[in-house]
Each structure stands twice: as C-alpha cells, then as structure tokens.
Length: 460
Image (cartoon, rainbow, N blue to C red; front, side):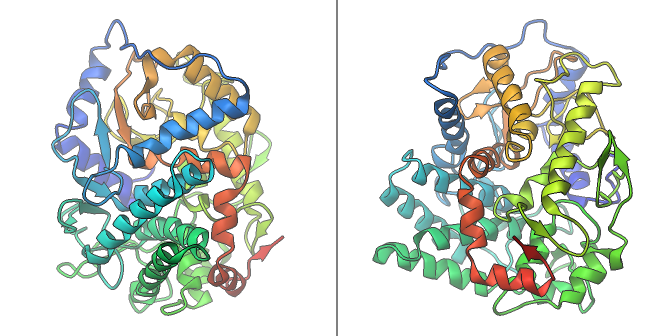
C-alpha cells in the first residue's frame, strides 16, 4: 500500500476497513500464513462450447448475474462483497460505483437476451426509485449505502457524505440506461426521464470547493476535511468528463487542465518494455497503476479514437495493459503460476488483506478481472487467460457468480469471495470488445459530446 497511500484514499481506507472487520483480513491472513494443502473444488460447469462466442456468452452471463440474482433485494443494487465461504454480516451494504458497472452489465444481459426487457425495466425502475430516496449530498451519493434504508454507511469516519468519483461511476451506467430506453414504450420513457432528473440534480460545481480542481468528498459533518483533490492520472477521468458535461452544474475547462492535468505535468516520457506509458500514473510512474485504471472510466467512455492535449487514450490503455501483461511474463519475483496465460494485477482481496496490486505492488496474487476486463485492449492475451482460468483452474476459482475475486498459486490461496467492483466490470468490458454496446450508448449522450468538446477532446 505504500505506493498508493498518498495517492488514492480509497485503497488506504479500504485496507483499514477490511482489516478491521472479520469479513476480510482474518481469513486472508489465515490463507497466507497457513496455506491450505488442497484448494476447494468447484464443479458443475460446462466444459465444452460450440464456439468462442458461445463461451463468452456464458462468461458474461455468469458475471453479470452478481447484479441480477445476487443483487441486494430492496435496492436492486450490488452488494459491496459476497463471501460464499463465510457469509458477511453486512450483505445489505451496497456499493455505488460497483453498481454503476453492474447496471451496464444488465444492459448487456438485455441486449443478448439473457434478461427479458420488461423485467430489466422493472429492475431499473426499482433501482432509480431507491436512488431517488437515498441520501444525497448536493445530488451526489455516498460510497456505501444501506440497501435496506437508503442511508449512508460511512466508508470511514470522515467519509460519511458525498463521494463524487463513485457517483460518477454510477451515473456513467445510468446514462447508458437512459440512452437505451429513451425511445421505448411509456414505462421505458418514464425510466429514462427519471434518470435524466437524477443526472441534472448532481452538483458537480459544488465539488470544486471554490477552487480550480474537483474534490472527491464532501461531508455535512466534516466539510472538506478529507481533502482529496482529483489531480493526476488514476481511475477518475470519467468524473471530469461528466462534470464538464453536466447541463445544470458544469465545471470550467480550466479545472480539468489545471487540476486533473496538473497544467500539463500529467504527461510522461516513461517507456517500459518499449511501450510509452504516456501519462504519469499517480504513484506508479514506471509500470502504471493497477489495471482497473484502464477499466472504470472506460465502461462507457470509448477510448478508441479519443485524444486530448495530453494523450491518445486507446494507446494509453493498451500500453498500460501490455506493460502489466509483460511484467507478469517476466515475473521478476518468480511467483508460481505467472505466465502468458495467467496474468493480471489489479486491486482485490489478497493474502495480506485488500491491496492495489500492480507491478510496483506485486504480492503473487492474480486477479481474473484484470485480464478479462482488458479484452478490448488485449483480446488474444485476455482470451488465453480466460481459457486457462476456466479450463485449467476452474475447479478452484469458479463459483456461482463466475470467477472468484483473486487467487495465489504461490500461497495456495483460493478464497471463495467476490467484490462487486471487480466482478461487475467483466461483462460490460467484454461486450465493448465484442460489439462496443456500452461505449455506443454512453458516447451517444449529447451532453457528453459537448463536455468532451469543452475539454478539447477529439473523437474520431
């Protein structure tokens, strides 16, 4: 964590929160210090498919089911985590950002016929009804919400108010729903209209805190004491895109250029494995950060043909992914299992508690979502990993909602646990590789096109 402590408050607080609760750290440490001689076995999954397309259908359906059958029952949103081995006592706590990814995944389910359209409209309407009544802070939701009541579940003592980044991830998914149903029947049009109202009520300009940069948090009790300005490259780009795109509470372009881009200092000259990193990744300037930085903002934001004053975003994400892949091939620490078909470092559960895995913070833990959510950037490498995970390792890492969060062959560590933020990017990012569905929906928002133009983005 030392590489990210000063850079990403989320990882630091998550580490404390998970280690303080019995739901993560106790069993993680047990797995790390006393490896289980025989990993658990999961069976009852098909071992033959008519084609790779049929295989991907199955993979997508399994993973988006975390948000369908596995949803918190009152809200319809995604539980923060799901422990199949030791059920946690906070299954009612939903995650705002992870739910945004799951919402995009449900659209994949509708488009591919996994979920009946009418049932999806009912679920989305339930979700929107919950979000309308849930606690908001200048139109912005908290990181965690009690799915039974809509009340904020503090993410930390002072993090008990609005979380702008997690709410951006949520709204990214909701805007895709708006676009998907806006020209439908009366119920679908009503759903789209209610989403539009939530979008217009988000006060992005409030989160400038009177300065020329966005701030991650605001609390009615602690004001701006979290003091986390969004500067430099990490997972938060979509926050600035949406803030600039808001039809009611937009921010000036200068906040993006002077704040996020650090007046141009966000550019990098670093080259690793003969691949330019392009932008300075906060706290990870040699190899890049954990791979979710190439996923979260790009569930809807299409990096193909996207460029601005600082980067070509397709090259940025593809290079970031390939550097992560090549590092696992090199495997400088000699961890068991790493290779061309077993790669991918990103934030997840770990043998040492929750950790933001990356080449700079490599603990011998492979996270399936890292490779699988990278399908758009590395289709061949991701497919090789998928087949290895499923056919060779599936008896140990496959469960009810697809691949478990993470594993370590080095430590013989195979926890039967899911995290929404990892689980729910898989279906939409594979779909973006296959058809570009979620990218098309988000990029079809006229406000988004205006916001990109405002920030001097070029879209080819």
